[in-house]
Length: 175
Image 1: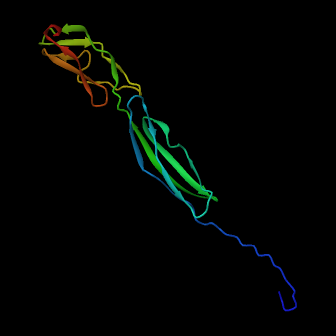
Image 2: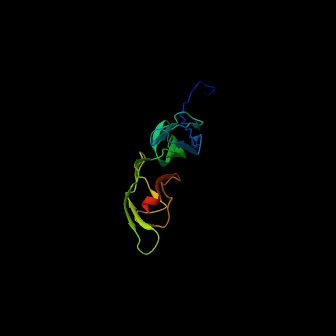
């Protein structure tokens, strides 16, 4: 206002720019889960989010409390506010600790004695195993049809998880 009482008005537009992305971090880098009764584990985590303005939203490809299968899964979470975002990730590792179980055990089906050396070729049906978390890799220290030279030979079968089972013991009457 001037000395004569005249008033002039002008509109000024003030724009406040939020140039800071939200701060965001997950509580852990890796979650290790072990199966106990199924081939799955439930992963839980928290996150910390902050920003100088309100309106931050958090999205993730998995939510805390999700169920994960055996293996490694990457969880990617992003905090977004006014078009700016910050991301963080963690890994959920589910390890199969359930041992496979054997469906059948081997039994000798045929013994062919050698006419020239002391021993026999021994054949048997190999065992089979079931695992709820996938296929079972069966290993053995001998194969059906191998040549055996002495009694009291033990054939071991393993399940691919460093566990061995004494499945077949060949005695004198087999050789």
